[in-house]
Image (cartoon, rainbow, N blue to C red; front, side):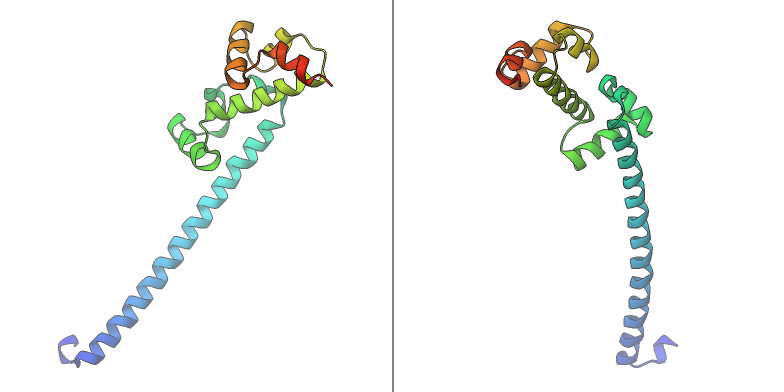
Length: 146
């Protein structure tokens, strides 16, 4: 039949077929995007729940992978795209933010704070804290005690 159609009729039919195919592809693509957004929301809800729990402070990257049900590589990609941080950097950021608050607003010993945010070794906590903020935890406490 296509051979019997004029060039203009053939072009019109091809345009209609092309439009129909594009509509189907567009529908499938938008359904896939919605599905990805739902998954994204699900892991973000889980992460928010974890952030509100005290156990979060002692979590490792492996714990985070297990809780969010992602491989290390997948979690790394997700965190890099969403937060521009690796999961390890994300964990450390939250741990040290909490440690800063405890140093400024509590009378807890520095070793207790280090343990609370997941460090078993005080010297490692001091070293990383100084590298991040340019002050030791003790110096930070003296400057920011309120």
